[in-house]
Length: 473
Image (cartoon, rainbow, N blue to C red; front, side):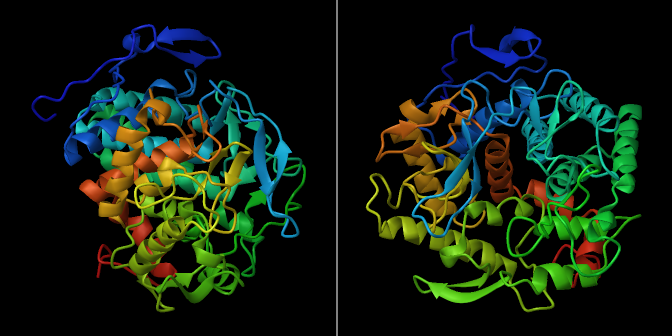
């Protein structure tokens, strides 16, 4: 902590909610105290503060029984969840629903595990305390609902039972499971010591990793990889994992499996040959290699996979430069916000970033094609590895100018619209996690270094025709 840095603590009566009562954060093991707004911080001190406060979501708001990441802060429950976009209308359609405070996000829990490793490395929590939390999670998951080793999208954090995401989506979700294993495998690599509890944790992770049958979702052939499977509905969701989007990590880990790997043909047929994989256009004079969205789609496409996968120096047999893809998509998203064709209040060089998150209409996959005037702080802050100067501009504006409206006990609230004078009161696991991890990858490449050196990950990349500076020769 830099000299003179003053943390203004919230009142000690600040609480965190659980289904089993309310506990003061001060009584939590290795408590991480919240900080108010502090003026005059240098860049490094500000990054420290933002990462640390955002991490509190996973440490203090984790489910008390399982330790998994709750899907969202239940102080304000979302009334709507994004369903689909009707191209005949100007705005998205929405489906109404609420998953409740027991709902834990499997993918968000993977992001929380990565954030916990950052917290240990930064000294916010003790290594032993963090390990005990991760063991608690692993012990819970190994007994919880899974389907051929693949976990559901949402899980009840007290019972381990599946919480259906939809009428047909009531079983395995291979994409969310890949985010979980990104975190678990990275933690297995981090806790590599001879201590008995570290060995126990590594064995638990390996048990789950080896049981996960990724190839089941290919139906045993080489044509498609399917996102969902249900014991009641089989593959009736009929939703192949097409590219290009946030699911590249799913193919890499599916190919990396030591017991149930997919073939390269599945990747080529379903991902590379899909109609939406290649873009090849330029926007604002910036070329975009991949993706069928005009101007690139939501920014989480360039964040979820690349929390673990380092895009720098990553190429494939099809000539794709993933450093160019991730950076250029981010630059295009920012350039669109600067152009601001719909003339929304607040958009500009200090306020940019369209991605999925909460809005005044509910949860929406914001992007240039679906622009409601809502900025998600996670969009620009999780882009630090690609656009550090521009991301720092946005961070200072969010913190110093908008802080009284969007800064809280778990970092920045999920979204805001200055046009509508609307400021979210919610926090989402899948948006908070990338802030902690991607800022750390910008600062130290910590998670990239851990994940990219895992032998199975390197094998998965090699099987799919990728090349990386991290791969063994």
